[in-house]
Image 1 (cartoon, helix red, strand yellow):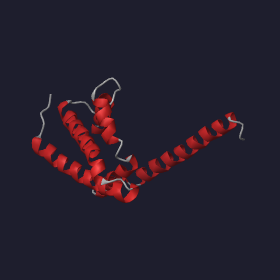
Image 2 (tube, one colour; image 1 turned 90 degrees about the vertical axis):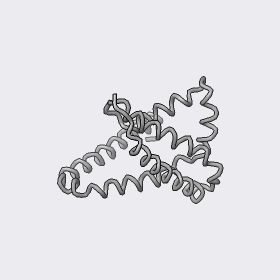
Image 3 (tube, helix red, strand yellow; image 1 turned 180 degrees about the vertical axis):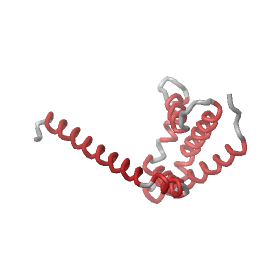
Image 4 (cartoon, helix red, strand yellow; image 1 turned 45 degrees about the horizontal axis):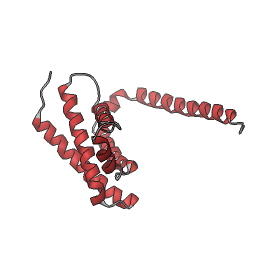
Length: 154
């Protein structure tokens, strides 16, 4: 079993706090939600994310921290647990779409830092992206066709 690198976890906590603050600002601008009203929910989300990062380090499986965060949130919000009501009360004040802007910005910066690696992959990346887009488009079209046919709309 691995140990926790407290210095690295502290840096990750700083990043989580920064993303949380940006998210709170986005909540106010985009959805009119008071940052003070959303703050307790954002603190809960940051703590769940921090616990997920620590678990990822402690449990040596090839599972992303996101999976640990989802599992922790799922367990803490199960209806029969006393933590459910309080966590849901506070996290319901945080609009989910408001969290996507800083996360996508961070993902974009992360990808931008790997430009040399992307250049090495070159045409293969374009081919894979094209096939994914094509598959997604036709998959969506097939599902829509089936559903509309079943409903008698076409």
